[in-house]
Structure formats: structure tokens, C-alpha cells
Image 1: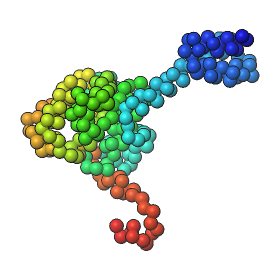
Image 2: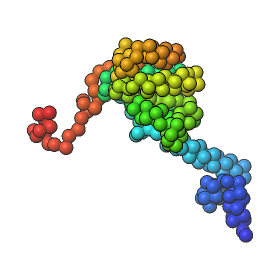
Image 3: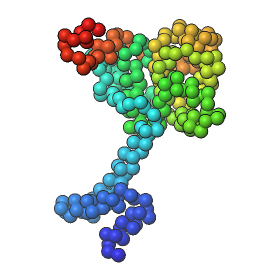
Image 4: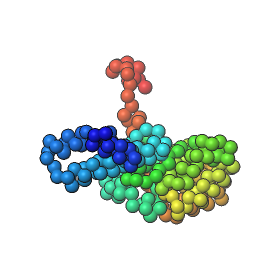
Length: 256
């Protein structure tokens, strides 16, 4: 066995998969640049660490369950003037997750609530936090079936282990009293353990209506609001303002 194959065997034994696969390239680069032994070793170990960090980040994003990627850099502050650049920068630093603070993003459809919530979740995944995303409707399904369904139980286990839970579209559909109680239990169990982002089209005074229980609504909001920033987002719908059509100008699209 020559030295190269022996090094690859050592890398396999030490589970340095990336180093094994990239060894020839690393050696070629070191020879062409005539770097020192210590610099070469630093590059080998640094490359392995970066590969593992990138794979871990990809895994966190996949396990979070986002419906699609959204990024803070693409959030249009000119369109959504309910939040300032300073506030967005403060949120992007994610100190509120370390402090176990919640965020409630409220407002009508299309003003950027979901974009901001997912983008903050993505940023958190990239920074090493464990995140879970769900719509309210999907969460109710999981809570109802976690005792009898293996996938639902696995989803709940991920939620309990998360640093951040994003619950999207709260209040868009009514829920039963049983579901409301399950939601209350979850919020209570996560209090001072997990940060929560809520996106909702309901003002606080309307929660009693979609929960169909004023006392329960008060109890849930009391726990969510204990350590919380609420951002009231307003304005026209971004989707309606930027709707696209395959029809030519002068066709039916102009009459819609």
C-alpha cells in the first residue's frame, strides 16, 4: 500500500470522509503553492470542519420543514414599511432566540409575515439553531395524532428539541375546543424553553373568536406575550401588487 492509499485508509478509520475524497486535490494545491507542512495540515482540517458544518446546516434546514426558502436579504423594506432597517437588523442578530423571546407578526394577508418568519428561521438554521416550521392547520393535525402516528410523534419530538418554533397562519381557520386545549398545552410546555414565531391575521381581541373560548385565548396570549415583541404589519398585499399573468397587455388580464 502506497502512502496515498494508507492516508485514505486512515481517513476512513477516523471518519474523515471529505478529506479522503478531496485528498488528491488538497495535495496538488499544496504542491503547486509550496505551502508549509503546518499550513497544509491546517487546510486539511479546516476543509473537513467546513464540510461537516455545511452538511449540518443543510440537515437543520431540511429537518425544519420550510415550504420554500426565504432570505432576510430579499425582504422588501420599501414595500413593507411597518418594520425599519434597524429592527430587521436587530432581529437578524437572533439574540432574542438566546433570550427565549417570542415574535408575533400580525396583519392582513400579503404584507410579508410568512416571508419574514421563514427568513428568520432560515437565518437561525444557518447560525446553528434547531428550528421547526409548521402551519397552524398542520400543527393541529400533528397534535391530534401524535399518540397514534409515528410521523406525528417524530414531528413533536423535533419541536420539543427546537430552539425556535415557527407557527404560520394562526387564525386563518377556526379550530375546535379540543385543538385549542392541545395548542395551549404546547405553548405552556415550550414557555421559557423555546422561542416561538406566530404569524396571524388576527388582532389579540379576535383570538377568542377563532379559538371559541375567551378564557383559553387569554391564557395562550398571556404565555406568548410574557417575553415577546409584536410587530403589526400593514399595507397592500405584495402578491396582489406584483401579480403576474401569461396574457398579453390588452387581453383579459387587464380586465381582472
